[in-house]
Length: 323
Image (tube, rainbow, N blue to C red; front, side, top):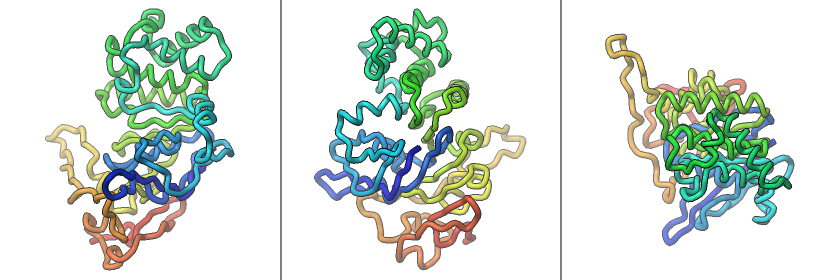
């Protein structure tokens, strides 16, 4: 359904160009949930924007291909892209308070998606918007339809954004950190909502997060991103329990332990050092200066992708290595 090949994105302003996404390749199949995991600044949101051709004016696709439903997206006009966005390919934004207009009723904002892609009259779009609101768990849809964003809780606003994304029953939804600013209880509800909607509509889902725990029981496959590159990829049970890349190992060690202190709760072990400057990346492994299992070759060239175990690929000279 989605085929990304050798995609690279650069930000080009007044200073040095910033390599935000570098040589990324992956697929998403119909009905598949793919988790994209990485810390802030790793390039996850830029990748999502590139897939929908919604990059900032200072960014450009330096090379690569994005094919969706057997159609190349990188060369389409804005008018052609508008017919695809929201109808076949949708995005759930990280911060609904920003993505929703503060001066427009939330029900109207859902109905407008339908009006853009359906030849329906206003009454039918309004009724379908109310139905969608009920389906995503917004009770009393008549009252909710006429509410403004500031009158809703964070969880309710997130459900409105989910209803917008699912309004036209797209084939693929990109969810960019959809639970990042929610409390634990609301986070669980939104994840369950996405699971229910995925099961009901059979849609594919690219789920972007910085939390390994969220993809563990949710995704069919997980990709780990660091400094604009996919450094490890495979089934969540394999990648998170037996990681091969030292960066993935560090992310797993950073998963919070909710057990009481007296029960032997583990100590969090942060990844040493800082992420690299994407405008001054070395012609070597970008994680080399933070890695405790680096080899001399790591500082001399960029590692290629290998597949040491079945179904699990990694970009590392010393996969699963010890110091």
